[in-house]
Image (cartoon, rainbow, N blue to C red):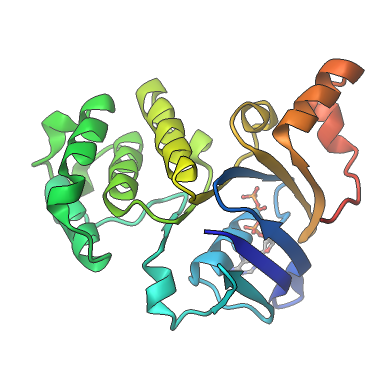
Length: 244
Ligand SMILES: Nc1ncnc2c1ncn2[C@@H]1O[C@H](COP(=O)(O)OP(=O)(O)OP(=O)(O)O)[C@@H](O)[C@H]1O
């Protein structure tokens, strides 16, 4: 799925979180969104998920205007927030079943991939455990399993690398994100870890005060780092005005 953000704005009282932001996000890619605290990263994901309403501008998915009432478009995307949504009173397995139901996906078709993800992340033994008793990292692994169950065309993920997931979970996140992108999906995740972003993304999007300060392929960023011997932190400190 491709996305276009057309002069989108979002205010909270006197605070401008997104400021007439315009961006084209190509299908089949993983995009890392970086920016200082308060730059607008989480707000961007929330408005793209329909969790938060826009004040102005439009979000288009595959050319269609998105709004909260477009349930058909909402079923094509999955938002994994910093504290992923789950049903605490239900088992891990039942949580997965609810996601499959809500997204109207066929359980039989997804079974193998879900089991593979649960095994890969060390969650296979926890399927009957009440989700409310899981650790923070385990909740995130459940969220990864939900992503595998849903296989969204647009996956919005808030701070996966600050999730508390162990090496198994982080490797699984990367594998799932890459496989969704390989199938033409779009994965957008936020992070503060610039080195990680350059190592795992097709594009780097740097936000500054609710606007795009930099949009560049991570290959190109990598080249600049190699050729110019620039430190990653230094590169991101010099926020260039470069809006696609
Ligand atoms: N519900 C809210 N009410 C008031 N202000 C808000 C709300 N949500 C976000 N903001 C403000 O909007 C701006 C952008 O916030 P946002 O959470 O999108 O930033 P961020 O880039 O994700 O930050 P961080 O790196 O700290 O997570 C900030 O100035 C924040 O204080």
